[in-house]
Image (cartoon, rainbow, N blue to C red; front, side):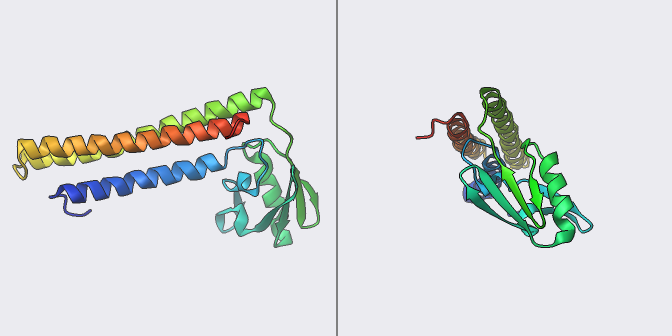
Length: 192
């Protein structure tokens, strides 16, 4: 880790770590199902192969056949069963129809119960990522307190750094709230 003897280094490093948390959240949330059908729905599906787990797009081409059907064209016929099983085992609750190396994934409209469940999942996931942010905050607060204890920085500098760390946490927490709000609108079908 970089030398943390300046507020700029602390800010830069914390922003970097918090940005990584936000990126992971965005990747996860974008894979949550909405009533908008998109190949992106499958981005979190991992296929178990003899070489370990691979993302679905490493083994297949994904496209929209029509507004409610995703076409999955598996590149290698030996991977068809693995891709099919992974889709069925995913939390999407979808079953592909297979014809040769092609699969058709008919995506029905979400029921009210599905929407409520997905919003709960999104909220729970966002709460987990907020905990990750608070862990990042704690790590940086501990560093600042350690610097103060070792007399590397003054009491005033310590308070200044702690306020800056809290401000960064607030900014990224609001970002998570915004991501959740947008995803709720998408799931419930009132995206503006």
